[in-house]
Length: 136
Image (tube, rainbow, N blue to C red; front, side, top):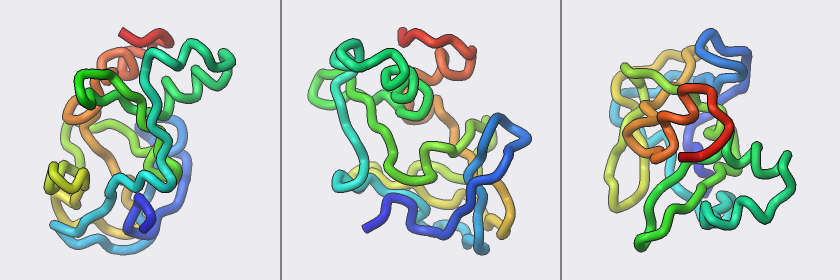
């Protein structure tokens, strides 16, 4: 199973850098994303310092931080989802938390950028959105 369950394209974003854009119409309630441990890398945040500086920056830029079993971990998506930009009014929101999935909050048209609210799932959202390089 792919993590992104809808067709997408990467294109320059008006929000920031590259964005993840719908390549098809996505009806409201459609599961857009689900965690897939076979393609997504999960690593304890404490281990990032053992990586080369460019690799560590890549994780800090494109990964998101969650708490699992009392430990902060970084999840790096293995597909275009790592290019999903932040919005305070996202069109992709959390679905069933037990299945670690996100759904379309409303109908999303082909060509529209997929956005999510970083504050809803990323413990490192404040740093990312401020443009800082070091984790909190």
